[in-house]
Image (cartoon, rainbow over all chains, first blue to last red; front, side, top):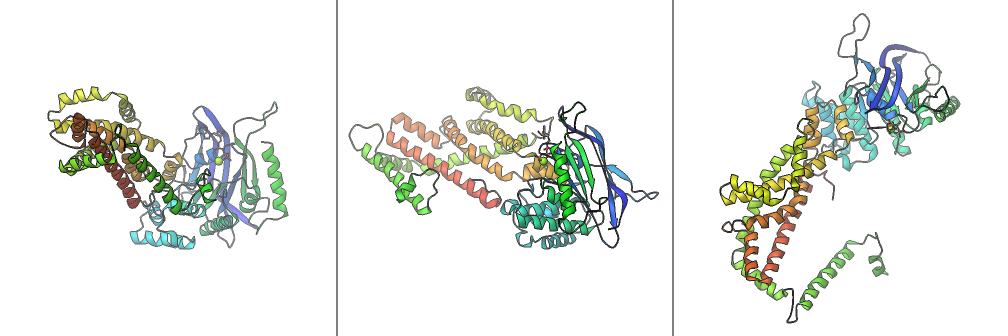
Length: 280
Length: 259
Ligand SMILES: Nc1ncnc2c1ncn2[C@@H]1O[C@H](COP(=O)(O)OP(=O)(O)OP(=O)(O)O)[C@@H](O)[C@H]1O
Ligand SMILES: [Mg+2]
């Protein structure tokens, strides 16, 4: 399982976020590279785990530029600029750069599925016909063709989720942040969502999914990099009350990424992660 | 067996049973009306008196009066909803926010104070009627519209932001277009207040006619049958508008599924 790290695709630098005076997360640092595997288009899948209220959603709002950082920064490559001296120019993340699907699969309530997809391409320079073709091809591929003229409140949860994902794929390009994409889904939905992950991963080398979940097994099976958000231990004992990254597992380095299904190595890691989470 | 179900809390019944229950209530009330007013001494006019009152009203041009009231209502509603929408949509803009907030609080001002100033400002009585209505309706509209805007969950705003919407685009897509159906519902919900005010306001100007004038006239004659007939007419017209607004909302905005 050979792979090679290339450009940095996400760099979170000493990030802290506060709501009002209340600091929710601090000193968060993450670094992810574009991974290249021979003979395969391989995107990146990053999972963020952590106990409830530790700040996963808050971190995601930071990464997507929806909330301003109190300190630190989030840097992503700027693909609108040409490579200079072998380096991809980078930029600070701004709202809209990174696609974000929240836990409720929020959509425009007054737009049909097709209209919503066309809307998310409004800033591209495709012609009207090209936009329609592109939207239709996604609708067919994701099994939404016969509901394309329906409004969000006429869809099931799983259908809404897929629309929310496609919207973001059409609008923001390579990055997709999903907050608890598996919560409230049944076995079939989860299988579909996993298939969606595969679709995204194989579509482009730079495609990167960042997701949170409370299902540790699923995270271990799907992700190639796992971050744990939790409360760090204080030197004098006890736990701090501000979230941060307390552990990072690089499944690529551990040699257990991209396997088919869940195996014994994955189980071992799952138990390790459980232990870390319980202590943070 | 079946009757037991009718008294079981939270039980949902078939459409037929539902209709049956409603008919029973209707018959009970109408029946009570007939029986209770059949004696010689009575507080409430008998159906017969009400029917005579209705016939008298009709021959005095009830339809024209209803038309006049509806026309006044329509004029005032259009002006005030446009004004209220502009004010309410300024709510998300920090610098303008105090405006809708202040106007919404002004609804606690007493009616008389405002009519006093309006008489100074507006010369002819008909515009006076319109403006009194506009002022009052607007204050209530602004309050309700502001509540609609405040209730929009942050996720909907964030969703638009994550799709690269500019702030003005969010205002347009999420607040204005995305809540258009609520505007109709705000109209409907405040209709009762408007309708009640309308009748009061109409008695300012007798010559212009309207349901309010008819009420005032009937008051003078102490004609109970007429008053009740009129009240029933006003109630029914109000309910008809209520119903049409709901139907309009649901047919124009298919996604508008609330109540
Ligand atoms: N808008 C806000 N204002 C103030 N505090 C907030 C706000 N949003 C979240 N918090 C607080 O931030 C902390 C982290 O919340 P966050 O939603 O990021 O947790 P989470 O890890 O996503 O939890 P869960 O797994 O339950 O979704 C919580 O203590 C919460 O009370
Ligand atoms: Mg969360």
